[in-house]
Length: 177
Image (cartoon, rainbow, N blue to C red; front, side):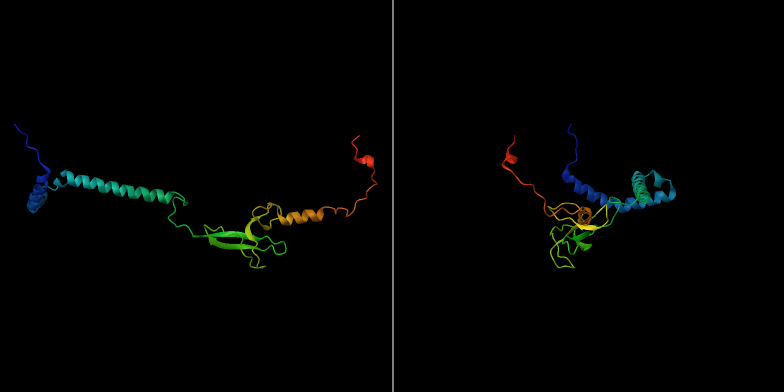
């Protein structure tokens, strides 16, 4: 005995038939609901929809609670990043040594900049000296020593004699024996 299996071609016909019967089924369900209001909670479709709605409300409440209790930061923040960076810069010219802040794009790498005071291309990123507190330029390839501290150390060092008294040399001074 061959089993009767529905084919995919019949799906559209069945759907069309159920859509045609839908207004009558809706009227009958409303009439039954007036007679027995508890029928609303025994309906599996409405029960599932109610549970889904309850879960959505619970998830929204949990998200709100977590957002309210966690401190703001990189992950919790809904702010956009700024396209500009504030850079501390200083002039590397020993006669100028001006320092100030500039705002440049985040991907900026066109060093050196032109100094606002002396007009030369001697502006580099600056670092504050932990000893004296002055802002000093950090050009690439040069020492990271603070020029203010270096000048102070040079001023404190006793001056070297300009000439040294030389004793008369003899031929025996060069011999290792």
